[in-house]
Length: 308
Image 1: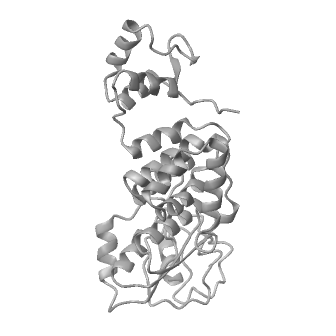
Image 2 (image 1 turned 90 degrees about the vertical axis):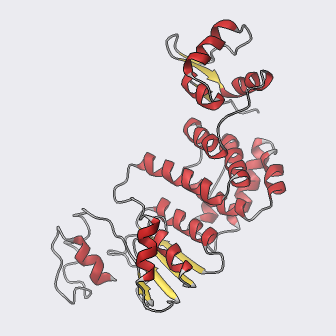
Image 3 (image 1 turned 30 degrees about the vertical axis):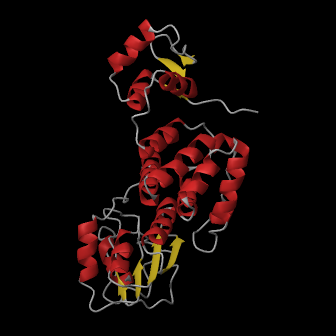
């Protein structure tokens, strides 16, 4: 059964075509063959995306959107109940391991076949990425899956990864998810004496600090983050940025549930969540990590320092 095409507004059509909204209004008035509204209201009509794309192609208006912009549009327009963005993060790594011709062939598969092929590709990552074996795709995901594959093919895995992760963080509205600027991460990595082999980031976020450590020669990268989407993003991003390194990323709150209690790393790089009062002050009052004093509720950074 064919899947319904997403619907778009006139403003979205203007972005896809790279024209002004006034131009779209002129098209609607002057061209009898412009697609009729398929939903919405009289004052705010919606149009079938595939019908619009076909009409633009017939007029010689190639899409002005970049592959990453197309991916972002597909994410915003995806059907309710489709796979979560964090599941799609894993497909980025799987896609990056295939040749461009393979990605083109995958993108041309029918919806159900494409979903099944994407599932198999992601399941192969179960040993490297948290939750890979639990990911499921359906034919409803076909539009987003195609956009993702073409984004990886035409740009690269990091570009697709950035679009997916930022969209997921917008949806979740989570606090403490600001990315460490690359220059700052590089500076922190350069402050590590010598060339560390193993580096831990107990609040790894998108993995920027660990990626900088890998560029300094680290070969064993350990990360943990309380947000599953951040843990997945970090695992996938590090696998793309440091393919020769041994990458281990876990999901969970490092202060409450340390995933690496026996690990002795050569260095710890961390930009922990700030302004968080609920860091475990009450339940961790007698934790043996507080060798230099029990951190105050409002000073979670002191807990992170002693944890490191």
